[in-house]
Amino acid sequence: MSIKSHNRREFIRTGAAGLAGITLFMNAKGGSVAVGDNNEPFPELVEATIADLQRKMKSGQLTSRRLAEMYLERIRQVDLKTRSVIEINPDALAIADQLDRERRKGRVRSTMHGIPVLIKDNIDTADKMMTTAGSLALVGAPTPKRDAFVVERLRKAGAVIIGKTNLSEWANFRGSRSVSGWSGRGGQTNNPYFLDQNPCGSSSGSGVAVSANLAAAAIGTETNGSIICPAVTNGVVGIKPTLGLISRSGIIPIAHTQDTAGPMARTVTDAAILLGAMIGRDKTDSVTNVAEKKAAKDYTKFLDAEGLKGARLGIAMQFTTRPEMKAYFQPFIETLRGSGATLIDVTFTPDYSKIGNDRTSVLLYEFKAGLNKYLAARGAKYKTLEELIRFNEENKDKELTKFGQELFLQAQEKADLNDQGYLDALAKIRRATREEGIDAVTNNLDAIVSPTSGATWSIAAVAGYPYITVPTGLRENTATGFAFWGRPFTEPQLIKYAYAFEQKTKGRVTPQFLPTYPKKA
Image (cartoon, rainbow, N blue to C red; front, side):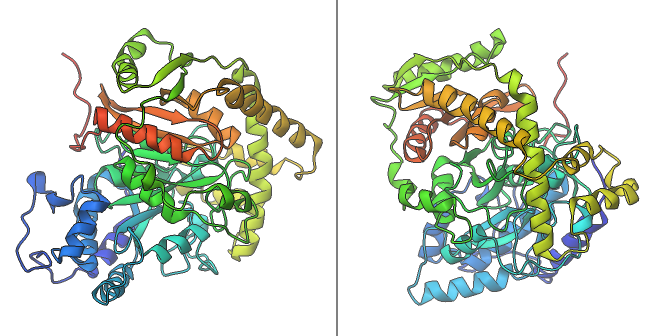
């Protein structure tokens, strides 16, 4: 799964230039910092939380610049194995310096002030970094005219965007089969637990980088599982928020009825902090108008270690059919009961296998319309989906070596969004996932809980409803997670339950970057 990439090697050399001449890292007070085991630099950053880092910056043990340098050095060394970061921000240290100056003057913008984060390479930045969705077709394209709204929010909060993460090219919407974590530009991102295993996608780089402790947190995007799948697979917390809670402007689109950005972090607390920094009304994205009235200003106030007491939760186990998996998750279910939650078995009555074609059809229609609009505004060389198809074919030795572009071709054949076939399919899948789905089973319940799985996250994704996954450990060659999901704009309750569960279970496992999963004797 290791693929060489000229562009990636170039970025490592360029990124390291900002640290040239530093042969021994020092902390903010001048003391030397030891290199960790396995040649891993700065072991004090492993599992460090945003609160930990803020305490050190407040006390003067660290500055934002030193923190950025430390994470950049971890990227330079550790990411040779994981290949999760596609590009680093050449202005990262200058931005950190400015935030340090503000701190010295007594100004701290938010809990994110001076905190290094990574963002997925389908999110626009109006800076010296590229935005390519992993495609060689957008390498060298004009810089976006403005930051994505979510990037504006992060910068305003004082986050230091230190780079961009690799992804499944075009957010996993190009071929009928794909290789998760692979893009023509970035090559293959590797799972941090077992480097030859699937990292899942499409926010592969964001999930892997956070798990590998290459940044305090990261931003992913999701249409259907692209935050949740890499979060659970790489053993981190992922929040797929309600559609509209986070603006979609400046994010390369797949489907406007499902697309959203969301936080990925090692703890529920850090994910809640990051979520609060990302939300806000965006006049260029009308879907945020409703969200503005329902969003919380601070999601950390819902963190309650005893938050499961009195909760009425629907337990959805119908999609976990293998007996060994039911047995594996039973102790976690008992943890919920033991923490004071009442669990009620729920069953989804729609046959979701029968609407698979409708779900795909909606994505195809919306992808063509949304991408053509984005490309035209971007002013790139390739301005339409049709031109991208031609580019891929002309460069198939670089772009089509792992999988094809069947979804591109199918989307190109679709009519516009006034087509009755599109309208009927959209109404059908929304009814199945909303009125007949989540709305129906949550009647008189506070939320739904389940093992994190594709069957469950897809229901929430199509509905546009929130979903949170929390790590529960490793089972054989993959990480596992437990999910909290429910009605729109119930993030406060879901975060409360997820945090309480996390505090009772402590399932996060630090990766050791093993070459392969040890085979049983």
